[in-house]
Length: 450
Image (cartoon, rainbow, N blue to C red; front, side, top):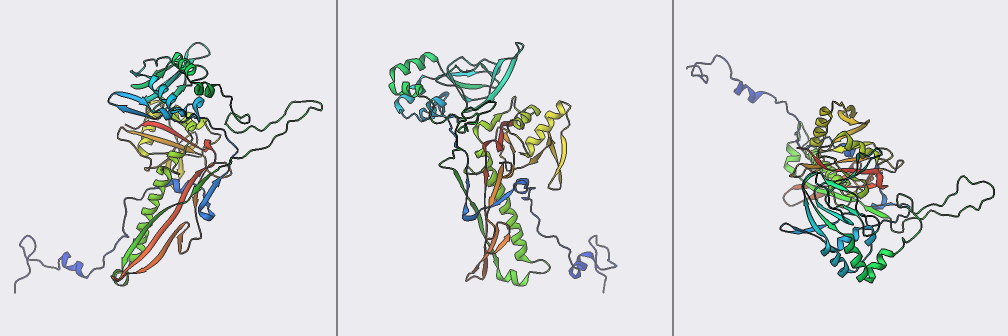
Protein backbone atom coordinates (compact mmCIF):
# COMPACT_ATOMS: atom_id res chain seq x y z
CA UNK A 1 0.00 0.00 0.00
CA UNK A 2 1.39 3.44 -0.95
CA UNK A 3 2.02 6.22 1.59
CA UNK A 4 -0.51 9.11 1.84
CA UNK A 5 0.20 12.07 -0.41
CA UNK A 6 0.83 15.57 0.91
CA UNK A 7 -0.66 18.80 -0.47
CA UNK A 8 2.12 19.04 -3.08
CA UNK A 9 1.57 15.49 -4.28
CA UNK A 10 4.64 14.08 -2.48
CA UNK A 11 4.41 11.18 -0.03
CA UNK A 12 4.00 12.26 3.67
CA UNK A 13 6.27 10.71 6.28
CA UNK A 14 4.28 11.77 9.43
CA UNK A 15 0.80 12.61 10.72
CA UNK A 16 -0.53 15.91 9.38
CA UNK A 17 -1.29 18.77 11.75
CA UNK A 18 -4.87 18.90 10.50
CA UNK A 19 -5.44 15.30 11.52
CA UNK A 20 -3.58 15.81 14.80
CA UNK A 21 -5.87 18.68 15.80
CA UNK A 22 -8.79 16.26 16.03
CA UNK A 23 -7.17 14.81 19.16
CA UNK A 24 -5.89 18.08 20.63
CA UNK A 25 -7.45 20.37 23.22
CA UNK A 26 -8.16 23.92 22.03
CA UNK A 27 -7.34 26.90 24.23
CA UNK A 28 -10.23 29.40 24.02
CA UNK A 29 -10.85 32.98 25.09
CA UNK A 30 -14.06 34.18 26.66
CA UNK A 31 -16.33 35.93 24.12
CA UNK A 32 -14.87 39.33 23.22
CA UNK A 33 -16.91 42.51 22.63
CA UNK A 34 -15.95 45.67 20.73
CA UNK A 35 -18.77 47.75 22.25
CA UNK A 36 -17.06 47.97 25.65
CA UNK A 37 -15.68 51.46 26.36
CA UNK A 38 -13.95 52.87 29.48
CA UNK A 39 -17.29 54.28 30.77
CA UNK A 40 -15.52 56.91 32.83
CA UNK A 41 -18.77 58.70 33.66
CA UNK A 42 -20.18 55.67 35.48
CA UNK A 43 -16.94 55.41 37.45
CA UNK A 44 -16.52 59.01 38.56
CA UNK A 45 -20.13 59.83 39.48
CA UNK A 46 -20.87 59.45 43.21
CA UNK A 47 -23.90 57.17 43.37
CA UNK A 48 -26.79 57.95 45.70
CA UNK A 49 -29.12 55.16 46.80
CA UNK A 50 -32.66 56.38 46.06
CA UNK A 51 -35.44 54.98 48.19
CA UNK A 52 -38.92 55.08 46.70
CA UNK A 53 -37.67 55.69 43.17
CA UNK A 54 -37.71 59.52 43.41
CA UNK A 55 -34.93 61.97 44.31
CA UNK A 56 -36.00 65.51 45.25
CA UNK A 57 -33.54 68.41 44.95
CA UNK A 58 -34.51 71.18 47.38
CA UNK A 59 -33.11 74.65 46.69
CA UNK A 60 -33.52 78.21 47.88
CA UNK A 61 -36.33 80.06 46.21
CA UNK A 62 -35.13 81.36 42.84
CA UNK A 63 -36.80 84.01 40.70
CA UNK A 64 -36.03 82.96 37.13
CA UNK A 65 -36.62 85.48 34.35
CA UNK A 66 -37.09 84.36 30.79
CA UNK A 67 -33.47 83.75 29.87
CA UNK A 68 -33.86 80.79 27.55
CA UNK A 69 -33.25 80.41 23.89
CA UNK A 70 -35.54 81.56 21.12
CA UNK A 71 -36.83 79.20 18.42
CA UNK A 72 -37.28 80.11 14.77
CA UNK A 73 -39.05 78.77 11.70
CA UNK A 74 -37.85 79.19 8.13
CA UNK A 75 -39.57 79.21 4.75
CA UNK A 76 -36.92 79.07 2.06
CA UNK A 77 -34.45 81.82 2.91
CA UNK A 78 -36.92 83.69 5.12
CA UNK A 79 -36.51 83.18 8.87
CA UNK A 80 -39.12 84.21 11.45
CA UNK A 81 -39.20 84.00 15.21
CA UNK A 82 -42.06 82.02 16.74
CA UNK A 83 -44.19 84.66 18.51
CA UNK A 84 -44.63 82.69 21.75
CA UNK A 85 -40.85 82.25 21.96
CA UNK A 86 -40.46 86.00 22.54
CA UNK A 87 -41.54 85.29 26.13
CA UNK A 88 -37.98 84.04 26.63
CA UNK A 89 -36.95 87.71 26.73
CA UNK A 90 -36.78 88.77 30.40
CA UNK A 91 -39.14 91.73 29.93
CA UNK A 92 -41.82 89.51 28.33
CA UNK A 93 -41.62 86.64 30.79
CA UNK A 94 -45.18 85.50 31.54
CA UNK A 95 -46.75 87.75 28.90
CA UNK A 96 -49.74 86.06 27.24
CA UNK A 97 -51.18 88.47 24.63
CA UNK A 98 -50.76 86.38 21.46
CA UNK A 99 -51.76 89.25 19.12
CA UNK A 100 -49.11 91.61 20.46
CA UNK A 101 -46.47 88.88 20.40
CA UNK A 102 -47.35 88.17 16.76
CA UNK A 103 -47.08 91.89 15.95
CA UNK A 104 -43.67 92.04 17.61
CA UNK A 105 -42.49 88.96 15.72
CA UNK A 106 -43.57 90.53 12.40
CA UNK A 107 -41.54 93.67 13.08
CA UNK A 108 -38.16 91.93 13.29
CA UNK A 109 -35.99 92.59 10.23
CA UNK A 110 -33.79 89.80 8.88
CA UNK A 111 -30.09 90.44 8.13
CA UNK A 112 -27.51 88.06 6.69
CA UNK A 113 -23.94 88.77 7.75
CA UNK A 114 -20.53 87.70 6.55
CA UNK A 115 -17.64 86.94 8.92
CA UNK A 116 -16.26 90.06 10.69
CA UNK A 117 -19.28 92.13 9.56
CA UNK A 118 -20.79 94.25 12.35
CA UNK A 119 -24.27 93.37 13.56
CA UNK A 120 -26.84 96.07 12.76
CA UNK A 121 -27.70 98.17 15.79
CA UNK A 122 -31.07 97.56 17.37
CA UNK A 123 -32.96 97.30 20.62
CA UNK A 124 -33.16 93.50 20.38
CA UNK A 125 -31.04 91.17 18.23
CA UNK A 126 -32.03 87.51 17.86
CA UNK A 127 -29.41 85.09 16.55
CA UNK A 128 -31.14 82.63 14.23
CA UNK A 129 -27.98 81.03 12.85
CA UNK A 130 -24.24 81.45 13.26
CA UNK A 131 -21.89 82.72 15.92
CA UNK A 132 -21.54 86.32 17.08
CA UNK A 133 -18.97 88.01 19.33
CA UNK A 134 -20.09 90.81 21.65
CA UNK A 135 -17.31 93.37 21.76
CA UNK A 136 -16.62 96.37 23.95
CA UNK A 137 -14.01 99.05 24.53
CA UNK A 138 -11.16 98.03 26.79
CA UNK A 139 -9.55 100.09 29.54
CA UNK A 140 -7.01 101.56 27.14
CA UNK A 141 -9.24 102.03 24.11
CA UNK A 142 -8.73 98.66 22.47
CA UNK A 143 -11.45 96.18 21.55
CA UNK A 144 -12.27 93.53 24.14
CA UNK A 145 -14.37 90.36 23.74
CA UNK A 146 -17.25 90.24 26.21
CA UNK A 147 -18.97 86.98 25.24
CA UNK A 148 -19.90 84.76 22.32
CA UNK A 149 -23.51 83.95 21.42
CA UNK A 150 -24.92 81.57 18.83
CA UNK A 151 -28.09 79.91 17.54
CA UNK A 152 -31.12 80.80 19.67
CA UNK A 153 -29.41 83.45 21.83
CA UNK A 154 -30.44 87.08 21.98
CA UNK A 155 -28.86 90.46 22.69
CA UNK A 156 -30.70 93.30 24.40
CA UNK A 157 -34.26 93.47 25.68
CA UNK A 158 -37.40 95.55 25.11
CA UNK A 159 -36.50 97.61 28.17
CA UNK A 160 -33.15 99.04 29.17
CA UNK A 161 -30.22 99.77 26.87
CA UNK A 162 -30.04 98.58 23.29
CA UNK A 163 -28.16 95.46 22.25
CA UNK A 164 -24.41 95.72 22.77
CA UNK A 165 -22.14 96.17 19.72
CA UNK A 166 -21.28 92.84 18.12
CA UNK A 167 -19.71 91.34 15.02
CA UNK A 168 -20.18 88.08 13.17
CA UNK A 169 -17.60 85.34 13.66
CA UNK A 170 -19.19 83.12 11.01
CA UNK A 171 -21.89 83.58 8.39
CA UNK A 172 -24.94 84.61 10.40
CA UNK A 173 -28.65 85.24 10.13
CA UNK A 174 -29.96 87.71 12.72
CA UNK A 175 -33.34 89.33 13.34
CA UNK A 176 -33.22 92.94 14.55
CA UNK A 177 -35.97 94.92 16.27
CA UNK A 178 -35.55 98.71 16.28
CA UNK A 179 -36.30 100.89 19.31
CA UNK A 180 -38.91 103.07 17.49
CA UNK A 181 -40.90 99.93 16.68
CA UNK A 182 -40.95 98.95 20.36
CA UNK A 183 -42.14 102.45 21.33
CA UNK A 184 -44.87 102.39 18.67
CA UNK A 185 -46.25 99.03 19.82
CA UNK A 186 -46.02 100.08 23.47
CA UNK A 187 -48.18 103.14 22.77
CA UNK A 188 -50.77 101.08 20.89
CA UNK A 189 -51.01 98.19 23.37
CA UNK A 190 -52.01 98.80 26.95
CA UNK A 191 -51.16 95.24 27.99
CA UNK A 192 -47.63 95.55 26.59
CA UNK A 193 -47.16 98.94 28.28
CA UNK A 194 -48.30 97.43 31.58
CA UNK A 195 -45.96 94.45 31.10
CA UNK A 196 -42.89 96.59 30.41
CA UNK A 197 -43.63 98.99 33.28
CA UNK A 198 -44.37 96.25 35.78
CA UNK A 199 -41.95 96.33 38.73
CA UNK A 200 -40.02 93.20 39.56
CA UNK A 201 -42.15 90.99 41.77
CA UNK A 202 -41.13 89.24 44.94
CA UNK A 203 -38.30 89.79 47.39
CA UNK A 204 -34.92 91.27 46.43
CA UNK A 205 -32.63 88.72 44.82
CA UNK A 206 -28.90 88.09 44.85
CA UNK A 207 -26.79 87.89 41.71
CA UNK A 208 -27.73 84.22 41.31
CA UNK A 209 -31.47 84.97 41.24
CA UNK A 210 -32.09 83.52 44.71
CA UNK A 211 -34.30 85.27 47.28
CA UNK A 212 -31.91 87.47 49.22
CA UNK A 213 -31.10 86.86 52.90
CA UNK A 214 -31.07 90.26 54.62
CA UNK A 215 -27.90 90.83 56.67
CA UNK A 216 -26.19 93.77 58.38
CA UNK A 217 -22.43 94.24 58.60
CA UNK A 218 -20.03 96.99 59.60
CA UNK A 219 -22.48 98.75 61.93
CA UNK A 220 -21.63 100.18 65.35
CA UNK A 221 -23.74 100.83 68.39
CA UNK A 222 -27.26 99.55 68.82
CA UNK A 223 -28.37 99.47 65.21
CA UNK A 224 -31.66 97.81 64.35
CA UNK A 225 -30.86 94.50 62.70
CA UNK A 226 -32.90 93.31 59.72
CA UNK A 227 -35.12 90.31 60.08
CA UNK A 228 -34.93 87.58 57.48
CA UNK A 229 -35.66 83.98 56.63
CA UNK A 230 -34.48 81.53 53.98
CA UNK A 231 -37.26 80.75 51.52
CA UNK A 232 -37.44 77.45 49.67
CA UNK A 233 -38.77 76.51 46.25
CA UNK A 234 -42.37 75.40 46.56
CA UNK A 235 -42.09 73.02 43.62
CA UNK A 236 -38.60 71.48 43.81
CA UNK A 237 -37.53 69.25 40.98
CA UNK A 238 -37.92 65.52 41.45
CA UNK A 239 -35.89 62.98 39.49
CA UNK A 240 -37.60 59.65 38.87
CA UNK A 241 -35.33 56.70 38.30
CA UNK A 242 -35.21 55.61 34.68
CA UNK A 243 -34.95 51.95 33.73
CA UNK A 244 -32.92 49.94 31.23
CA UNK A 245 -34.07 46.33 30.76
CA UNK A 246 -33.81 43.31 28.55
CA UNK A 247 -34.80 39.65 28.67
CA UNK A 248 -31.91 37.24 28.28
CA UNK A 249 -32.91 33.87 26.79
CA UNK A 250 -30.78 30.71 27.01
CA UNK A 251 -31.93 27.31 25.72
CA UNK A 252 -31.90 24.69 28.45
CA UNK A 253 -29.99 22.29 26.17
CA UNK A 254 -27.18 24.84 25.85
CA UNK A 255 -27.13 25.49 29.59
CA UNK A 256 -27.09 21.73 30.35
CA UNK A 257 -24.65 20.35 27.77
CA UNK A 258 -22.23 23.11 26.80
CA UNK A 259 -21.06 24.56 30.09
CA UNK A 260 -17.49 23.29 30.02
CA UNK A 261 -15.01 24.86 30.23
CA UNK A 262 -17.05 28.10 30.32
CA UNK A 263 -20.49 28.58 31.77
CA UNK A 264 -22.69 29.60 28.83
CA UNK A 265 -25.24 31.42 30.98
CA UNK A 266 -22.55 33.43 32.76
CA UNK A 267 -20.93 34.47 29.48
CA UNK A 268 -24.28 35.46 27.98
CA UNK A 269 -25.06 37.45 31.10
CA UNK A 270 -21.64 39.14 31.20
CA UNK A 271 -21.96 40.47 27.66
CA UNK A 272 -25.57 41.52 28.22
CA UNK A 273 -24.60 43.51 31.31
CA UNK A 274 -21.78 45.19 29.40
CA UNK A 275 -24.27 46.34 26.74
CA UNK A 276 -26.69 47.47 29.45
CA UNK A 277 -23.99 49.56 31.14
CA UNK A 278 -23.08 51.14 27.81
CA UNK A 279 -26.72 52.11 27.30
CA UNK A 280 -26.87 53.42 30.86
CA UNK A 281 -23.98 55.82 30.23
CA UNK A 282 -25.55 56.90 26.94
CA UNK A 283 -28.76 57.78 28.77
CA UNK A 284 -26.89 59.70 31.47
CA UNK A 285 -25.40 61.90 28.75
CA UNK A 286 -28.21 62.17 26.15
CA UNK A 287 -31.57 61.54 27.82
CA UNK A 288 -33.73 64.64 27.32
CA UNK A 289 -35.19 64.38 30.82
CA UNK A 290 -32.12 63.87 33.01
CA UNK A 291 -29.13 63.62 30.64
CA UNK A 292 -26.24 65.98 31.35
CA UNK A 293 -26.25 67.55 27.89
CA UNK A 294 -29.85 68.70 28.33
CA UNK A 295 -29.76 69.65 32.02
CA UNK A 296 -27.00 72.24 32.01
CA UNK A 297 -28.29 75.67 32.99
CA UNK A 298 -28.50 78.08 30.06
CA UNK A 299 -26.17 80.51 31.84
CA UNK A 300 -23.60 77.72 32.10
CA UNK A 301 -23.54 77.13 28.33
CA UNK A 302 -20.88 78.96 26.36
CA UNK A 303 -19.65 78.82 22.78
CA UNK A 304 -16.12 78.50 21.47
CA UNK A 305 -14.44 81.76 20.54
CA UNK A 306 -13.35 80.58 17.12
CA UNK A 307 -14.43 77.00 16.42
CA UNK A 308 -11.97 74.37 17.66
CA UNK A 309 -11.64 73.94 21.45
CA UNK A 310 -8.81 76.15 22.65
CA UNK A 311 -7.17 76.58 26.07
CA UNK A 312 -9.02 79.93 26.28
CA UNK A 313 -12.37 78.14 25.91
CA UNK A 314 -11.60 75.60 28.63
CA UNK A 315 -10.37 78.38 30.93
CA UNK A 316 -13.65 80.22 30.38
CA UNK A 317 -15.54 77.04 31.19
CA UNK A 318 -13.57 76.52 34.41
CA UNK A 319 -14.00 80.12 35.52
CA UNK A 320 -17.79 79.78 35.77
CA UNK A 321 -17.80 77.44 38.77
CA UNK A 322 -16.10 77.44 42.13
CA UNK A 323 -14.46 74.09 41.49
CA UNK A 324 -14.38 71.53 38.70
CA UNK A 325 -13.54 67.86 39.00
CA UNK A 326 -13.80 66.43 35.48
CA UNK A 327 -14.09 67.36 31.83
CA UNK A 328 -16.03 64.96 29.62
CA UNK A 329 -15.39 65.09 25.88
CA UNK A 330 -15.63 62.99 22.74
CA UNK A 331 -12.22 61.53 21.74
CA UNK A 332 -12.29 63.65 18.58
CA UNK A 333 -12.79 66.79 20.68
CA UNK A 334 -9.83 65.80 22.86
CA UNK A 335 -7.70 65.35 19.76
CA UNK A 336 -8.83 68.77 18.46
CA UNK A 337 -7.89 70.36 21.79
CA UNK A 338 -4.50 68.65 21.63
CA UNK A 339 -3.90 70.15 18.18
CA UNK A 340 -4.68 73.63 19.49
CA UNK A 341 -2.26 73.14 22.38
CA UNK A 342 0.44 71.93 19.99
CA UNK A 343 -0.09 74.98 17.77
CA UNK A 344 0.50 77.20 20.81
CA UNK A 345 3.47 75.16 22.05
CA UNK A 346 1.54 74.16 25.18
CA UNK A 347 1.78 70.76 26.82
CA UNK A 348 -1.30 69.67 28.80
CA UNK A 349 -0.87 67.69 31.99
CA UNK A 350 -1.28 63.93 32.08
CA UNK A 351 -3.08 62.21 34.92
CA UNK A 352 -4.50 58.76 35.68
CA UNK A 353 -8.18 57.90 35.59
CA UNK A 354 -9.59 54.40 35.78
CA UNK A 355 -6.14 52.87 35.37
CA UNK A 356 -5.48 54.77 32.11
CA UNK A 357 -3.45 57.87 31.33
CA UNK A 358 -5.64 60.80 30.24
CA UNK A 359 -5.02 64.42 29.31
CA UNK A 360 -5.72 67.11 31.90
CA UNK A 361 -6.06 70.88 31.78
CA UNK A 362 -5.39 73.04 34.85
CA UNK A 363 -5.26 69.83 36.86
CA UNK A 364 -8.77 68.74 35.74
CA UNK A 365 -8.81 65.36 33.93
CA UNK A 366 -10.31 65.33 30.42
CA UNK A 367 -12.15 62.01 30.27
CA UNK A 368 -13.03 60.52 26.87
CA UNK A 369 -16.70 59.71 26.32
CA UNK A 370 -17.88 58.57 22.90
CA UNK A 371 -21.52 58.92 24.03
CA UNK A 372 -21.32 62.69 23.46
CA UNK A 373 -22.65 63.09 19.91
CA UNK A 374 -20.77 64.63 16.99
CA UNK A 375 -23.03 66.15 14.34
CA UNK A 376 -22.67 65.71 10.59
CA UNK A 377 -21.12 69.19 10.49
CA UNK A 378 -18.38 68.08 12.88
CA UNK A 379 -19.76 69.90 15.95
CA UNK A 380 -19.81 68.47 19.46
CA UNK A 381 -19.83 69.61 23.10
CA UNK A 382 -17.45 69.43 26.05
CA UNK A 383 -18.86 68.99 29.56
CA UNK A 384 -17.27 70.06 32.82
CA UNK A 385 -18.72 69.09 36.18
CA UNK A 386 -18.27 69.18 39.89
CA UNK A 387 -19.38 65.97 41.61
CA UNK A 388 -20.66 64.95 45.04
CA UNK A 389 -23.33 66.09 47.47
CA UNK A 390 -20.80 67.78 49.76
CA UNK A 391 -19.73 70.07 46.91
CA UNK A 392 -23.33 70.54 45.64
CA UNK A 393 -22.32 68.89 42.41
CA UNK A 394 -23.58 66.23 40.01
CA UNK A 395 -24.60 62.87 41.44
CA UNK A 396 -25.73 59.57 39.98
CA UNK A 397 -28.94 57.98 41.21
CA UNK A 398 -29.68 54.29 41.55
CA UNK A 399 -31.59 51.81 43.69
CA UNK A 400 -29.65 49.12 45.51
CA UNK A 401 -30.98 46.16 47.48
CA UNK A 402 -33.11 44.97 44.57
CA UNK A 403 -34.48 41.42 44.57
CA UNK A 404 -31.98 39.05 42.89
CA UNK A 405 -29.38 41.82 42.77
CA UNK A 406 -26.37 40.77 40.69
CA UNK A 407 -24.38 44.01 40.92
CA UNK A 408 -25.16 47.23 42.85
CA UNK A 409 -28.24 48.66 41.17
CA UNK A 410 -28.60 45.77 38.70
CA UNK A 411 -30.76 42.69 39.13
CA UNK A 412 -30.98 39.43 37.21
CA UNK A 413 -34.32 37.77 37.85
CA UNK A 414 -35.28 34.27 36.70
CA UNK A 415 -38.62 34.54 34.90
CA UNK A 416 -39.26 30.92 33.98
CA UNK A 417 -38.93 28.29 31.24
CA UNK A 418 -41.34 28.33 28.31
CA UNK A 419 -42.79 25.37 26.37
CA UNK A 420 -39.79 25.43 24.02
CA UNK A 421 -37.40 24.79 26.93
CA UNK A 422 -35.97 28.32 26.73
CA UNK A 423 -34.85 29.81 30.06
CA UNK A 424 -35.51 33.56 30.51
CA UNK A 425 -33.84 36.08 32.80
CA UNK A 426 -35.00 39.68 33.28
CA UNK A 427 -31.95 41.97 33.48
CA UNK A 428 -32.78 45.38 34.96
CA UNK A 429 -30.93 48.49 36.09
CA UNK A 430 -32.44 51.71 37.47
CA UNK A 431 -30.54 54.96 37.09
CA UNK A 432 -30.67 58.72 36.70
CA UNK A 433 -28.50 61.78 37.41
CA UNK A 434 -29.16 65.03 39.26
CA UNK A 435 -27.50 68.45 39.12
CA UNK A 436 -27.79 69.87 42.65
CA UNK A 437 -27.01 73.52 41.77
CA UNK A 438 -26.75 75.08 38.31
CA UNK A 439 -23.03 75.87 38.38
CA UNK A 440 -22.14 72.22 39.03
CA UNK A 441 -22.38 71.51 35.29
CA UNK A 442 -21.17 73.52 32.31
CA UNK A 443 -21.15 72.92 28.56
CA UNK A 444 -18.87 74.25 25.85
CA UNK A 445 -20.98 74.15 22.70
CA UNK A 446 -20.32 74.38 18.96
CA UNK A 447 -16.96 72.66 19.31
CA UNK A 448 -15.46 71.98 15.89
CA UNK A 449 -13.51 68.73 15.65
CA UNK A 450 -12.72 68.71 11.93
